[in-house]
Length: 352
Image (cartoon, rainbow, N blue to C red; front, side, top):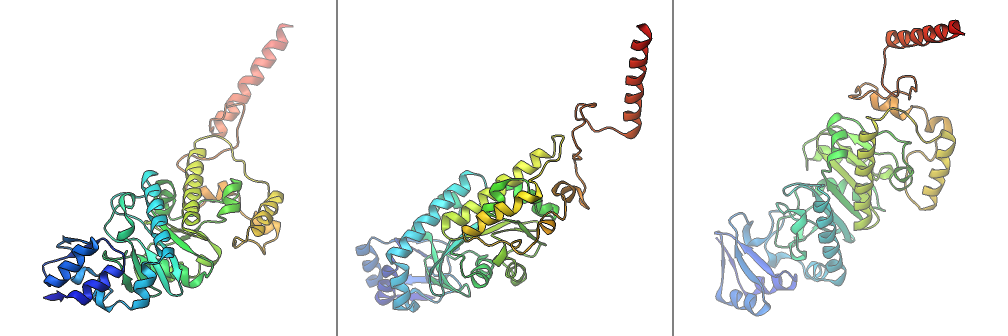
């Protein structure tokens, strides 16, 4: 049994949260109840809540340091909480996550980060549900338990100092590539080349595990969008919205590529034009793993051949053939068509 007295209640109020979640293992003293009532904090019973309404990674609210309490209730933290909730609604509205899937985080200060809670739909989050963690993922603020995948976010924050925010979700079109075990091919749409770059892929590892964090760590410095095999997409950006933009651009690109496979033809951005796009990207200060490559290296593999490669294509991509109106044909069918046309030409000539 854990007892929350006036001191602990007062420290909790300083976090700015408006809801205190407790379970059967927690008891409030009359003085603590009075403090919550005066501060307008609603006490809610939740059988799934961790002791003292603080997540497992944290001690009781009374163990938050005064500096962390002030930081978590600061204007800067409040703005980030609101931004995360706004992006969460946009992720949910675009059907990038179902149930309580996905998670978002952002830098708040040195070794301090705001992140989404676990077990909550991203479309219905509120600022007082947000959590604060340190660089190891240990929770230092908030009344909801932090996301179980925060260690994956930390792999990006630690390897990529310019990353201000990380966004993870499960958009269907990018997810389709993730379960096929491949990254989408490059050199098809300028927006991806400039604002995202090549999309990396990493094989499946258990979500939230040290193994997936180890896979993400070396990829993040040169890739702002990474497909996690049989799981989803994780992106980083220079703001909460920017991280989300990378997600949106990635999924729109994947959707377009999937649709294009059903249309005859196989065009791509010319090799000699790709350096121009990379120069634009460099002026924007965005990372890319291709800056040091020569034009030949940039176009080493045809994107459509890369799509079919060892994975196979459900709809083979073929150059448009006006003789067959774009339909794929075997050599025998083409030979028969040529013979038919030849016979018709000879017959017409013999009539003259």
